[in-house]
Figure 1 (cartoon, one colour):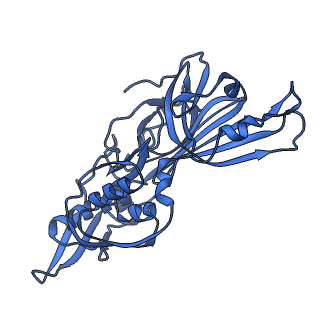
Figure 2 (cartoon, one colour; figure 1 turned 60 degrees about the vertical axis):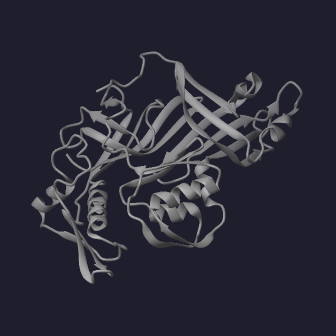
Figure 3 (cartoon, rainbow, N blue to C red; figure 1 turned 30 degrees about the horizontal axis):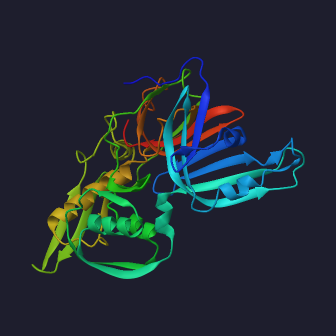
Length: 354
């Protein structure tokens, strides 16, 4: 596994750009802090705080209030000794603060990644004879994004968007093992990256400032049955999933369901409210639900010296904290903060097996 890229001595760095052009040295010198937050199935946010007070002229730097406007493109790169891009979006809010005394006036710039474009307005419409992935591609095109989707295979007779925004609709529409996210100007509608190898390794007492895991029972059980009705053949439809259908055990050997059934009792989850049209789709849905209910077996919060490698949707490896909790984890959220105290990364992770 790759070692964590933390040099013994390093200089925290950040780059803030607008339309891929780095802000001027004067603006950069006035940046007090930069924070980027990513979370699974949510809009990513960057928050940049600028000093507004000009001590030489004894007045506010009014030019900053017009340089950044709603819709202004913003890119952020962070790192130690060298930077890596972690955010691309556009300004969605400006919050100046006046009256804080000499040197206390500031401007807080809030930017969202372009997933926020899917939150504008609500729609009441019906998609006919389209797969879920084709619907995702159509919505991406409507909001000026490039859709990169994984085929969901089954063509639906009709799917109704019930007066909700596009993001809420896609999050409800997506299969249980899919993710909806945006990187720069590309909308991804795809299976999660949980089966991928870890992007880096963090070792206790070497890389981790703190790490707090929690293991829980999985009352949903170790089996899933998806039941439906075939209107053409007038016969029941059944899809099943259980042990062996894991997309990945993330380096572990025993799933949360197996541990829970051994400690308590076997259980089966029966799903009857999914709109299945054939046995193949029922089977895909059963496997997706099975993996969904296993994935939060172990959850944790952590913090480490800043590293841009830790991103929502990636996997990392945690070592030297004992067999039940050491292993590969999927990152569900990451916050990168650069300020007077240096650069730190905090994160939330999960895994489905030990």
